[in-house]
Amino acid sequence: MHPTGRLALILPLLGLAAAASATAEQKAAPPGPFEPLGIVKTVQPNYPDRLADRYLDRGEARIMIMVDEEGRLADWIVTGYTHALFAKEALDALPKWKFEPARFHGRPIGVRTELRFIFRNSGGVRIVPGDLEMRLRVRDIRRQEVFWQRVCKAEELDQPLDAIVEVSPMPPDQLGAIAREGKVVVEYFIDPDGRVRMPLVLSSDDEAFSKSVLLAITEWRYATPTRDGQPVLARVAREFKFEAVN
Image (cartoon, rainbow, N blue to C red; front, top):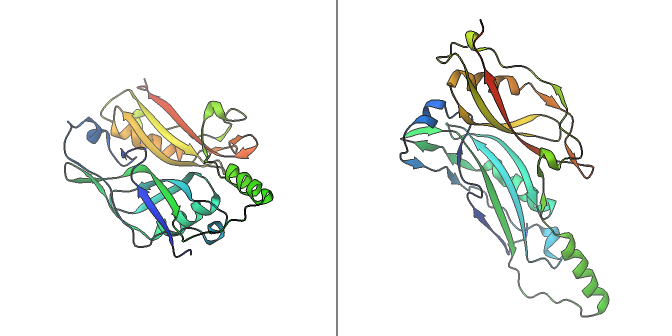
């Protein structure tokens, strides 16, 4: 660890959103008191040693997390960084943190949000040789430290998404749903292994429909999504329609 490095944590980057555990009843409830997710940072990430001597003043990593209604860190994905070592520092600390669940009208709910870790190298005086070769080296290093966004939309991928396994949600008559027909809109990530991660119900006409969709898509598998030949995370929004069976 670099003893003089420091980190600022900004929460949230994209805002808190009710996760898959938030029911249609909660979504339909009138606006009311919302208590955001609480984070107890029991371990503080530090500026990576290997980057402290690379004439870099700052860096960044972003991680999407899902915390359930009991305050457990259910899942997390690195969504971007300026250098992989910043992401590693963040990932080393994150599982050791404690969380207080978000609440809606006093009731704990699951949330999904993106954390932005900003690292700053606040070390002492650094002496940089003034010859041309060193100046060019510093310039080239800085050019490499651009933010790499790992999350892509479907249209940004090299190839259309290829579903290898898709399990259909159960029909309404087998769910005990109140509504006989309706739809559910779900957003989720597809990771480099082709797995569905962090599904979030954006809208739903019946809680039973939501549960059916979430149960089904956990079994789905895709071919690895890529951009410019590199494995990435694909962000997908999909609508599911339920119709009464005659």
